[in-house]
Length: 301
Image 1 (cartoon, rainbow, N blue to C red):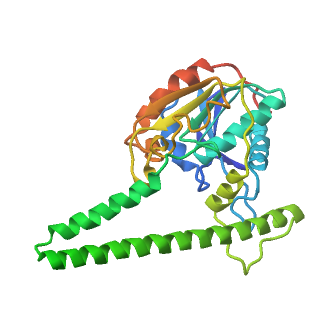
Image 2 (image 1 turned 60 degrees about the vertical axis):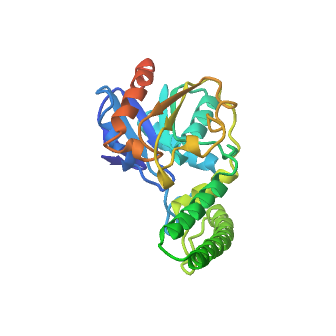
Image 3 (image 1 turned 180 degrees about the horizontal axis):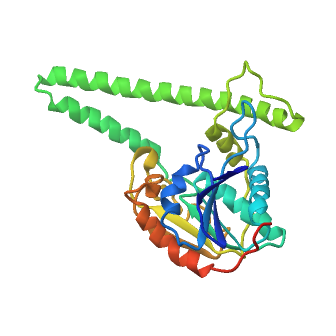
């Protein structure tokens, strides 16, 4: 069932668990988890605000959080609140908790699923190591060929050159795309500020591009009065690589902001931990924390 930006993933009551969309604007990713949570807990997902040509109509994390709070309060006017989200959703949920507590409300649980702060430091040499690994694979592949040493050396040089040129072209393309996104994001800020419509002749930004641009400018405030759970995935490769293999800090930057931080590890990768094959591990890990926060809430009229 849908109500404004809220989607009911699982009926229950009287408590409600609000999960914020991820960096692609998706909310159905939480459906497998919702089905495994207690009967007394309703699970609702929050979708991004959209306008014509703009799939995420906010230019700051603070504005995203404020909009989501308005939607949440239509369903649950007062706390205690249970909030969470994967990756981008976790960052927005964190800012929601900051704003709710500042307004005098109570947040008894904030679940950050594979979520990092904007200033979290990546592991040094990670990208270099990935490129060296591919370079070594290319050399190993050439050495397997039954060729004369001179021909084999020539093949290695050719493959190595292709890898180097490919890496340079990739870097040029990446920076070019970043510049294009930056220009359009500045346009987006003016469009939203002036209440205009997105120009038809300008390519639209994706949810990910808008969120990432806002994330770079976000400075989270300390959160000392909420129970914060950081969920870390343990396995996965490529886009599904767990953040513990990406960031140097084991808490992805949250320990300095949330002194009451609890870290739990679950099966699966960055996003696959929500899939059917791994989600039981996540649900089991969250259950004790959801039970601890079992307090009555005020029903909406």
